[in-house]
Image (cartoon, rainbow, N blue to C red; front, side, top):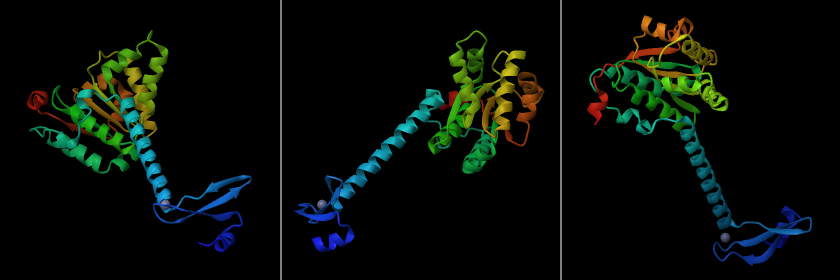
Length: 253
Ligand SMILES: [Zn+2]
């Protein structure tokens, strides 16, 4: 481009007379108020683009790391996925349900659909539930894990109020919540009230909750979490599936 041509583009743009040793392009510059800025040549602009892309990738990786740290998935289940689940006899229905849930996860999460995986301790429920959570986290959803007995213990009156607020915020506001081991807590009027606050609020806000429990989804579960929570859990928002594998944990080792 000659200086004449450059002048047509803008009166402030001019050829500096320098040539990029790398791509051979003339280096143009423009004046803005009293300062002169060089325009990047092709190779320089591609470097800038690459740097921008790298910066964006770093930011994305950082956000992913923060999401996982916030979620608090137990270390044992940090890598839990559907494809590393041992499909033992008795896990077929739950495996199929989780697979189906994950295949349409955007719709399911948007609709506030949850899952209840019930069965004896050690049947591999937590792995499946964490697979859902890990997948949501990879997708960029804010998700959180709580082990119910631990969560309720930390929410007991007399505890650290700031910490309790954080626990409740996570339980109420996370886009996807995993309540692990519902029913392992020492049930009381107070625990039922706390669970109702969480389950009822999430149900009203269309926020999906994934639940694992060793209680049967009948009077046993109703007694544990109260009438109101139970009716939420038995609503169309939840798919209830049994996991009956014996000693999933031992088989895994
Ligand atoms: Zn260049």
